Image (cartoon, rainbow, N blue to C red; front, side, top):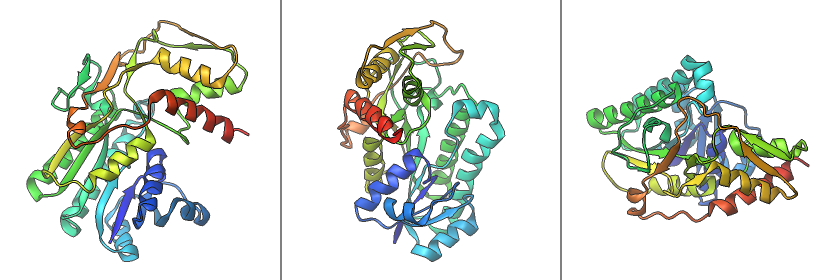
Amino acid sequence: MSIWVTGGNGFIGRHLIGHLAREGESVYGVGHGTIEEMDRQQLGLMGWINGEISAPNLDDLVQRGGAPTAIFHLAGGSSVARSIEQPYEDFSRTVVATASLLEWLRHSARECRLIVASSAAVYGARHAGSIPEQATTQPMSPYGHHKLIMEQLCRSYADSFGVHATIVRLFSVYGSSLRKQLLWDLCLRLSRGQRELVLGGTGNETRDWTDVRDVVRLLAGLAQADGAPLTVLNGGSGVPTSVAEIANMVAKAWGGDIAVRFSGIVRAGDPFSLIADAGQLAAIPFSWRIPVQDGIAQYVSWFKGQAR
């Protein structure tokens, strides 16, 4: 028997494959991008298909390693900005891919446990304080809408066909090998010699930052959990950290005399606060091990190392 990761060539996917392989699992994957043989061996990946999530490709994985006991579904759009530029592409990557996977599961592996990576973007921008899983979903971007449709598809297949799915709404995931978003941008600017970091917004905007090493430990653990046919969980710590605090952590870890200031210009539709209510996660129980200040310092160290 084997474990599959869709979207395994992405930031979280590669970390998850490595974690599962170190735990002794036989891991196979499907998604976009070539993974060379040496890279596959280093990750611990038994087999990889560079392609769409389609019945022929999933059948091919069965031929290679047997039917899956669990599938981690990480494939899908990964950028709000790109979803605005290319909404149909984001729809295809997230919604169409999920529908294809669920339909294959219905026919070929109904007992397989499905762990689905969704996003806190489904909540939108109108919540204050910690957001429980039962909160109103009001996505503000194609990215968020498509993640919500993905969740609804999972609910439909759970209700109608008994497919077992756990949906995890991830918040602000960061860590080594992340080459986009705020941390990458700050480090890139510092590496080019900037000593004054001017950021948009007020600096008081808060997010729920989670290290990818904790996130993959959470995802892997959920594959072992028994539960209802459909479970929705917040994949966040419940600890708010402001953008100003994050920027100052990066500056401190980088070293030298670095100033941080904010323009006060806020992007329309950008949530002021996006923090998980982590009560359901704590009840599993699951605890977050890596404090954000340690994780940020380690990210800066990784960036400096790979830039040499």
